[in-house]
Length: 604
Image 1 (cartoon, helix red, strand yellow):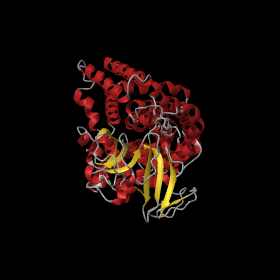
Image 2 (cartoon, helix red, strand yellow; image 1 turned 60 degrees about the vertical axis):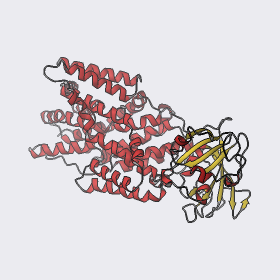
Image 3 (cartoon, helix red, strand yellow; image 1 turned 45 degrees about the vertical axis):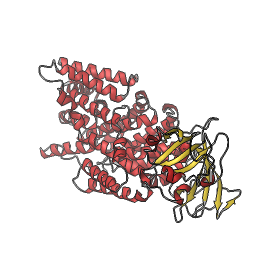
Image 4 (cartoon, one colour; image 1 turned 30 degrees about the horizontal axis):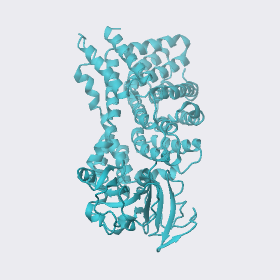
């Protein structure tokens, strides 16, 4: 090998060590590795190492741009409550962790058989985050199963992964030259191996996740002695989805960080309210909970703040958020009720709830007498904090994170946009990027989110890490190191017979999948596998299956897009993917080597 190939392998080794030892985040490590390769390119006479222009080509990669746009599409699904509408009936409220994992993995795998796994994971992530918070299941036990289920589902159909489609295209090119005429791969041909892999993979995760998966970040709410507790009054909307349902059916029991204290109907308080109590339109519900739980209450379909019902403030509702403000000694409405002080017109803000030391304020919002030191939870415009910064009415003001209201009235717009995106990709030649851009445009034009929210929804860390990984992978191929390694590994297996060749093809594909991605791995190993099959007189069908499954087996590396996406939410380290993914890769290899030659004879 040339010195450039050795240099490339050295940099990749350094990258792997840095990722495993968690020296820095994947984006920092990958960009650092790419920088080293570019620096080496200054001394490469044969241009086997990348120039700056070649190194940053990954930032213009269609797949990378697609992921960025899909973050925005996922935002539209989340901000309108559309994803909750789809996912909640599937996920339910399981009481055991394994039941939760199974409820999550089955629909995700089913969808991934026909859709790209990236948008599926992007759209399920906020749902699973909220689910963890409500069920108190550890996030680390659910986000890797989410990502892995999306990968496993893609092994069941021809369109499940881009790697499958690439291999099919390469086989078609070979058949045009008169080779592999007995190889026929239809939509569900690979399901003969992919379905057993899916079943074994899900079973493995259900059994071994207890020991192999970390707990990750806790999503429960802190309810310590110093936690600030509010009493918030909510109104059941007449004719809404929860009008006529029991408290249990409406999902208002076992709320994280909150509980339903009272129900008022026709100015009379209902006593001994149980889970079987039927809710009616215009019922007033009094909840006691933390500020985070108030944010969650605002997002429940069919519930609105009682303060919103009396009259509307000047600003458009979707652009408002929650703000906490502490009343100062110089506030002009001290000693007056919120209604008497005309708080809404004075500050263009609606008081949602009041916190007053250890006292629980159970009055109607308008009747509460304002006192110095009260912490008011307000629904107002985001610029309220800036407006009050230099005024003396409030000691402190701060915006509550993620408190913008859900646009439930636009949920079906988001769902139709998603279905249209899927239909365009499935039934027309349109690329996923093109379809996602159209869907994102529709969501933006119809007001499902603002452009400011769209920009904030894109996770730059994921995109930077992926773009740099593409550049590193191309350098591995450009320097010639990948071809030499693949040939040497497969050459070692030849003396051990055809089954060892099949296993080595799978393993080499997996290794290069980790280094240069699934498409690069499939393209790189295909000509080597083709030469081996023709030279040794082997049936190419089981070899093609091994390449497809190896190109899909992105379990042991954190650099795969789906794994990068769930890494932060699950609180994972790079070593977690290796620990959980390596045994799964080995299990899949055993299934491929055992099952594929039985269905399609390898010899003869």
